[in-house]
Length: 464
Image (tube, rainbow, N blue to C red):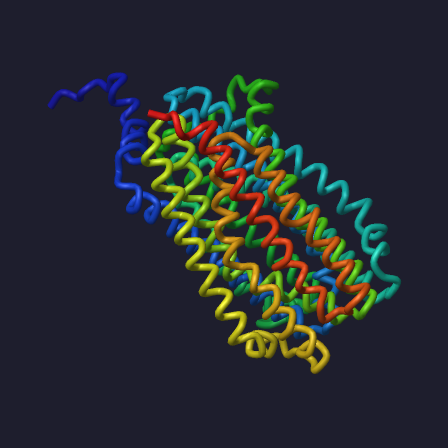
């Protein structure tokens, strides 16, 4: 039997399949198929964050406080990785929608290059800047020692984060959310398994304490990155990674960071907010700081699925905007918004009812229980409006309006939460600091609605 010679149509068949899926498949089914794997993946990662902090809390409350002091650095690192990845994903999705396939390939390779540069910056901070940073918040030598060990390990090993996130975002931009789910879940489960072994020295392993938590994280991140790269290079995708002849193009970097940089700033704002809140709360007690860290880990069970939903929605909206398919773009945005609000409503109800049970998981002291129950119940009042705002930010990113995403995040978080928290702490005490969250979200919602209307008139109304 004669072997058929592959022609141009055969070579581009995988691209046509992706095009048909993103541009033709019913939006509800498409959004579910692309979002559910990412939601499951991020839910498992959220579970890891909780389990990890539970094991750390079993060492001591000081260990949990130390991890909380380092948490802004972790968030900043993830912000740079994910924010840059969002810029890459948005650019690739738009180029695929415009059928500019070579430029989509080039954007992917640029993403890996930028990821390595980002890792070198954080590694340098980990080696030289960790201890001076921690001493800004406390003079407790035990706390400093614990925090420095943890911070140095996670920053020097952050190359696995940057390469892994870029691989995830490239795949998601093509409509493939199954592979990222597989390697992220593999990493998360490995992390959960290794944490108690390395922290407490089980099964003959050395007892590493807080360093064991960081080591488990690095091993898991390396494993997830390796599986992701294997899937990226071994299987066919609409986007190809071609390192031969690569040259850095200023225009491609600018296109990536036109969405990516505002996204980095938008996510990094939360690091600044946590730094500010840590500084405010530690004036009352280290227990209040530990409560804040506990909250951020537990709330990830609610927020992470919404972020996974956005990972599925962003390439759909970006592709159909590039293809000028107005109805599909709006249908995706509306379905994602409703889903996010429902998830957040369920989360708010859970925080209201089960706050005491959540704190018992961490073996909370009476002081932590007193502060924590009130904190969880008050902060969760912001969940529902936050769901709508998070999806709307993704709409802006999909359309290339990274600046608007940055502005709304500054309004919702930096410009409102910290001033509200400082005023409430100064005049009413630690029990009222937590109201800063729902107050800031209410104001941010009003600003968000006006931005959505502006984007609709400018970019969406006159599409085909």
